[in-house]
Image 1 (cartoon, rainbow, N blue to C red):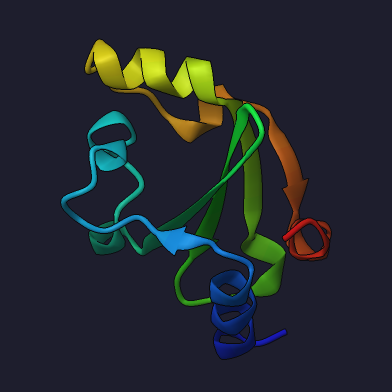
Image 2 (image 1 turned 45 degrees about the vertical axis):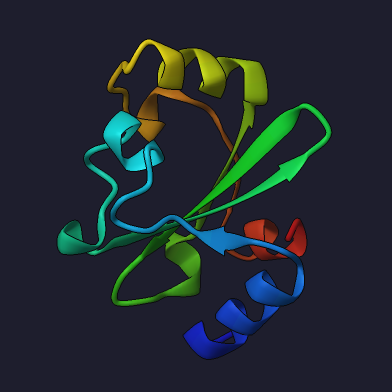
Length: 100
């Protein structure tokens, strides 16, 4: 799947790109476009799914993280910086695409 097809799929499934002024980038400061990374998010039940897209795009570099919304809320409320690497990946590469 190429980058354009990925974006089409993400948008069609209700995912939103985390923009520069989003508070999530305050929590995950290492994950920004200047460093060649895009983050996309969606919410399911009590979970927040974050998709990490490394640029230039290669499907094998996709990483999907599933965080409890309560855990993410705690980080936001306490303005605590963290790294996605502190959380377990729920899928990578093509397996991440299958879960979108």
